[in-house]
Amino acid sequence: MVEVSTSDGTYDVVVRAGALAELPSLIVERLTCEKYAVISDDNVAPVHGRAVREACLEAGLDTSLFTFPAGESSKTRRSWSILTDELLEAGFGRDSCVIAVGGGVTTDLAGFVAATFLRGVPVVQVPTSYLAMIDASVGGKTGVDVEAGKNLVGAFHPPRLVLADPEVLTTLPFPERAQGLVEAFKHGAILDRAYFDRLRADVGDLMAADAAIAGPAVARSVELKAKVVSEDEFEGGYRQILNFGHTLGHAIEAASDYHLGHGSAVALGMLLETDLGERLGVTEAGTRERLQPALEELLGPLDQVSYDADAAVGYLRTDKKVRRGKPRVVLLRSLGEVDPGSGWSHEVSQSQLAETLAAGRGVAS
Ligand SMILES: NC(=O)c1ccc[n+]([C@@H]2O[C@H](COP(=O)([O-])OP(=O)(O)OC[C@H]3O[C@@H](n4cnc5c(N)ncnc54)[C@H](O)[C@@H]3O)[C@@H](O)[C@H]2O)c1
Ligand SMILES: [Zn+2]
Image 1 (cartoon, rainbow, N blue to C red):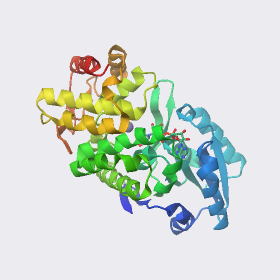
Image 2: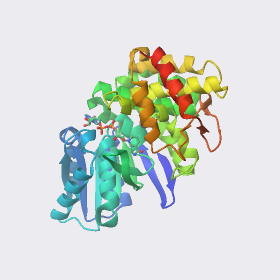
Image 3: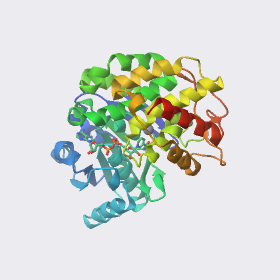
Image 4: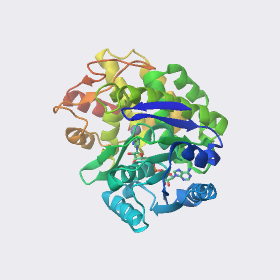
C-alpha cells in the first residue's frame, strides 16, 4: 500500500493481486455514500465493471453501472455531459460516489465527472491497464480532450482510494501492455536505475501479465510517482520530471495524427531528449545506448519508426507545456537521475529541438 499526500489529506493506493475482491470493504472503510456509480468503457464493463458492480451490490452498496464507448475519442465534453445527465436522471445526489473501472480514458473521464458532478463527489479509481495503474490513476489529474488539444479541460480531483489489482491485466490487449509499460521505464530512467534494469530483465513476464512480477513493478512505479506528486501536487516544479520524453514525444505523437501509440512516441521522445542532453553536455555520454535496447525489447526496433519532423516542430509551437514561448525539456544527468536544470527542466530553443527532431528522423526512419 502506498500513501499519497495531497493538500486535502492523504489517500491509499492498494496494489495487490486479488485485491479487487476486497474493493467493497475498502470502500466502506473510507466512504459512506448513498449511491455508487461504476463507470467503465464498453470493453471493460463486461469483463471487470459488471463484476465490481455485483460485488458492491452483494456488500449492500446501492450501485449502478454506466458505460461509454471505449477509446480516446470518448474522452470528450460530450461523454462528460451524457454521463452527468445519466447520473442526474438516475437520482444520484450529493451523497454519491463514482467508481472508475478502466484504463486511463476512464479514470480521466470518470474522474472529471466526479470532480464536477454537483460541484464534486468522491472518486475511487480502479485502473485496469498498465498505463492507468502506473500513471493515470495517481496524481489527481482528471479531464477531457477538446478540439484545441488533449487534456485541455479538466480539474485536479484526488481520488479517495486507488485499487490496482494486477490480475485484471491478463485481459488487457498485448499492444496496450507494451505502450503502458513505457511509463514504468520512464520512472526508472528519471528516478531509479535499479528499477529500470529490473524492468528490462522482467520484460517477458511483464508482457505476460504475470501478477507476481507485474504487481511489484506497478507498486514501485506508483511509489515513485506518488513521491513526486506528493512533493509537488499542482505541477509547480518538481512534478515536471514526469514529463521526461514527453516534450518531443507529444510532438511526435501529434505529428502522427495519434496513429503512433503514446508509449512509442514517448520512447522516441526519451531517446531524442537524451541525444539532446548528451549533445549539451548535461547527460552522461552513453545514456542513450543504455535506454534504447531496453525500450526496444518492449516495443521492437525504434529505428524503424518514422515521423514527420516538420509537423512535430509545428506542434511544439502550440504546445501548452511551452512556457513563455520557450520550450523546456527534462534532461537526465545519467540513467536513473534527472538533472535539476532550472526548476527541473532546461530551456532550449525551437531550433535546437527542430535539429534534434530532424537528426532523430535520420536515425529513426
Ligand atoms: N491523469 C493523468 O495523470 C494521466 C496520465 C497518463 C495518461 N493519462 C490518460 O490516459 C489515457 C490512456 O490510458 P490507456 O492507455 O489506459 O487508455 P484506455 O483507457 O483507452 O485503455 C486502452 C484500451 O484497453 C482497454 N482496456 C483497459 N483495461 C483493460 C482490461 N483490463 N481488459 C481488457 N481491456 C482493457 C480499453 O477498453 C481500451 O480499449 C489517455 O487519455 C491519457 O491522456 C492520464
Ligand atoms: Zn505519458
